[in-house]
Picture 1: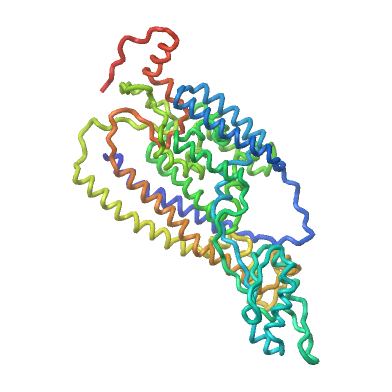
Picture 2 (picture 1 turned 60 degrees about the vertical axis):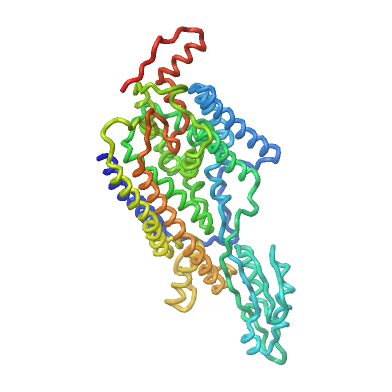
Length: 536
């Protein structure tokens, strides 16, 4: 119980360090501005897998499904560590080096989550029209005639009620800027007026759920989830290429203290929240950009990412699967699902004899020892502790959401549109015009995007961060609170058993179990030991 109290004290501190370091990293990234690339910019040739034909996409999904079935059978039905190792090497070869790490269920998280898109609403400005002697009907017809210049735009209403609605992107912003510079002649001898001065453009963030996502990405994301609900984390055991390459180098793994493992495990939820936040707000695909192994799978890439990948593998020789256990965002999703799995790998195929031989067999700290011995803790004290922690859950979640709301403005600067809009706004405030004092503003000055449109787009993106950042930080705080509650709950265990959330179903513990060994001897026709005695 004393060790559990220390864990309850240390874990919030570790979680605070995790959240603070993540926030500091997000803010520190903004030391460098995001450049605005001109139209004649030629991107470098980045090695990436060629698009797959529809037939080969079916093949990839079929191979994934087959590997999941075989891994589940090897882990639960045949209890074969050797079979899982062979399947691990096959998965590393196919999904890793042949498919070059793409498509991947881990990166698919960013493609299936809802996305904030910005919708532009262009309406006639009645006051500006009246000042130039133009009717709202004429302005509406001028813009309606040009609606076909956009890839996808909708028009509704007439006159003052006219609305041109379109999704905002690089092409649509340039088209809006070009049409806004076109001029329309008012009655009489008055000079022509730019169309952009006769309308109001409002931009709104709109949350849309997965749209236009290829079916193969949905399948790669969903199949391991279904397999986990049925049989535990057999995807992690022998199918995931990122886990496979780490499993191959885990030669002399050491075990971490339980409190340290619990604290480091929170990083995966921080990473998951940050990745979903950036993908939802259009800030980029963090998981794919920071994948430590994709450069190794593709045998090329930025030097820094290759060095990081090599460093993780060197660390993995002594600390088994560090990415899987402490960073993988997909693993963070699989942990609670594995707790609810229909069936799960067990240490022994029959009754546990408490021989304690499996205690050191798991390098992942996923084996839980019996807790029926010793003096039980006072029941009343346990109930009071649990009740106090349950009251802390909403308080800590609300505090996390409040902290996210405070950080939303800083985190929003990670988005290139927000960073660009702020740079332009600073020059406008200082000089009254965009002079191109920085690389960002110089590139923007040569673009066709009007300043007011860029600023409106930046404000819309900031509003999406103002909603999404508190949700992400509240989610992290909720995970920390639930972790505290789970550590306070003392579940009675009479035998050695795997922790369903942490167990990767790798089969390392099978060989240490004498009951399993005796059963294998029986299958081979040999005589097993006469008796297997349980130890206290």
